Length: 448
Image 1 (cartoon, rainbow, N blue to C red):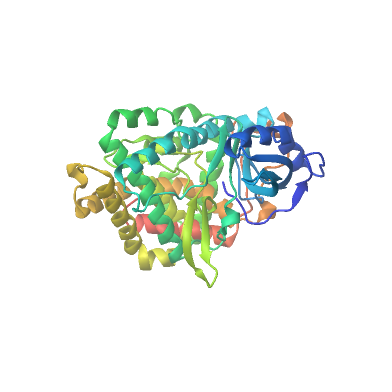
Image 2: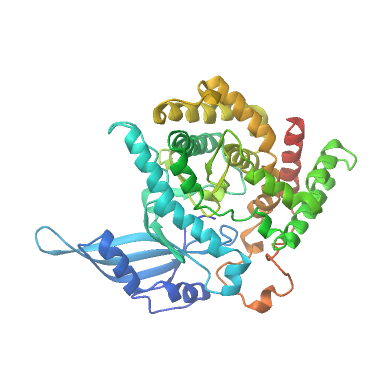
């Protein structure tokens, strides 16, 4: 679910050397010939001679694929006819080699979503944007360049080369980081909503390319044990922090009741609303990269959005609830929630005005849009509590406690659980605190 800043090379030269399990698995797909074939179209004047492979994410940063950082090197033929040294760093997102592991994490479906996003959905939205904006107008471009996207592999630019880095997932986002991300998510949502308003039939075709990655009825049995453990853990954590007979513990007990929880999440994910659009689907800290001001490390210059495997057609409130409740602190929400919501809705409305010939009646003024969004956040925002049962243990655990996605897994490793493998993280005080604070906020704001 993310790309970390530092990694140590494990494969060098022409992809021949190998001194680790991660390199061995990556090497099955990544080869010099493959890079040469792909980049002869993207860089026709370049001859790639070698590549170096490094693990591209730490444990706890990614759960559905293996990420590798690749350094490509070779020669470029200049206009003078001479050859000059050339190199390029890219990120490769690789489908797990093991069939068992691919099935365990539903990697085929998730990869298919991201391939459709980069090859069809985003190009169409950007073409629509270009038709509505002038040459000198700002444009949404907060995603990495994608060199190739196929069923088992994505190759994207390495944003580290442009100064981007991941924030600390244990701390939660700062006010500056949160506002910067909200602006980019608002622009992404506006592109989708505006395209839906202007070209409803074509928009429906784009939505038909998306498969719900987790919360669909077909997955109920597969995720039964997985979410049964998560909901029990969440209830236990909140009960250890708050009085067992409080309205907060009662609320999470009702929401997380195991026999109806998954069905409730399916309903929230699939509900049709006036503000339904193609959403990111996985707005948590590891899917945002920041370019900070070198002279002022607290100031964000740019934001990039990553990982579109869980894109879904849903209320835009699902993305924003996920971002605000799973990625920020209660202290920030108490002080700045309305400011953050205004930041998002004002940017959303500004872009809708740019992109739409005529806005629908339900959002043709900023006040109407803000009222409608507030209503959808109250109605669908509790979806973020369901996500938090997954995200908060992941974001607060140490890297040593997280599963290693670079190790191969055999069928024997998964036989004890029929369905999705359960990620069982040791409880910690920060996790208990964050889960309890989300429940408090949602109950107090009449969302739960």
